[in-house]
Image (cartoon, rainbow, N blue to C red; front, side, top):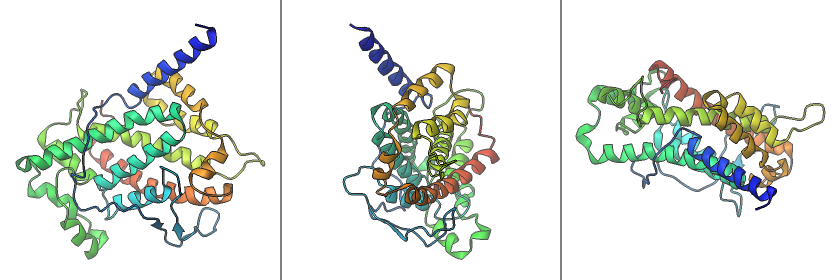
Length: 308
């Protein structure tokens, strides 16, 4: 075997290992819509008229992209559904948002797509826990914990009515946290496969993707647009790299080298230029930011930002 062939094999091995370590392990489960109250529609997302960062209006409708597995309109729909009522994040649309983000990563090529496999395993853990809770209703929350879904004083009657229609330990981020604390399955000293620990790993990865898309939406600096590879590496270094070992960080660098050029992202979201890409991505970043901030607050309030 030649030197080049050996190097190629080594890179593949490193990336496979990265995929297994990216979010520190997981299980491979499958779940068919075990949570209720959220209807996934593969329709173009109706965007409200609003101004982007540069003051320009975002197009009212994000149409689907023909021939693309990843659909930015579907991602925004799921993200908005996850924040359907105040102060919480609904888990089913949250996980559906991750399904779409996995498609986004897989569209970037096999090297980057390897990372998505571990994210899929994390979403599967929460889905399996939700399925188990649904099969064992006697293990569900008591009425005090269910009340988390109706604590929205500032949200008004409409949100309270909507919240009261949704119950269950794994219905939302806050209900899951309260349920697992109540059941004693969250360990603050040792690794357990709790939904809260799994959510924290997804939460950290979401910040990485949010920052990457935010940077990808930036306007040129001194007439130069930096490469997606450079931007993704920079976003990683300021987020997930803080939680990874030296070996995983080095393997991640290899994955980012294979990142496609900027023109690929134009095609991926069906836009013609950087200006249009910025408008679309700014809307995505805004939606991700709302989900991230609510999750961050819930985890922080319960001392879960450093679960082992």
